[in-house]
Image (cartoon, rainbow, N blue to C red; front, side):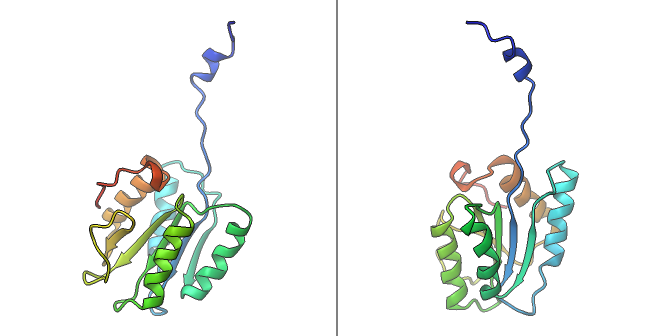
Length: 160
C-alpha cells in the first residue's frame, strides 16, 4: 500500500519542548542566576523552545517544594542542577541521590568541589567541578539538552 504523505513526512522536523529546569543551591549564599541566564541564552541561540519554566531555588526545602507541582502532574524536569555547598551536607548528598533514584529520566547535574564525598567513577552521578565557567556549561547543555536528552540515552563516557 502506498502512502502519499510519506514523502512529505520525510522532511518533517518535530521540536519537542524542553521540560522544566531547576537550579537548586544547598548554600543560601550562592546565586545560580548567572548559570540560569547562561542556560536561557544557550537555549535561545540554539533555537530551543523557551516556553519552559526555569526555577532558581535557595535551599533543598524550596527545591523540593518547587519540584512537587510538575512531578505531581507527571511532568519530569528536563534538567535539575544541584549546587552543593563548599562543605556538602549529608542532606544535600542524600537529596542528589534521591533525585537520581526517583527521576531517572531527568538530568541531574551536581556542582561540586573537588573533595565531594562520593565515588567519582560512579556512572550514577553527573558531577561538574566548581567553579563552573560558561564554556564548560555550554558543553554540558549541548550534551544534556541536545545530544542525549535523557540519561538513559546518554554516553556514560561524556566528561565536561
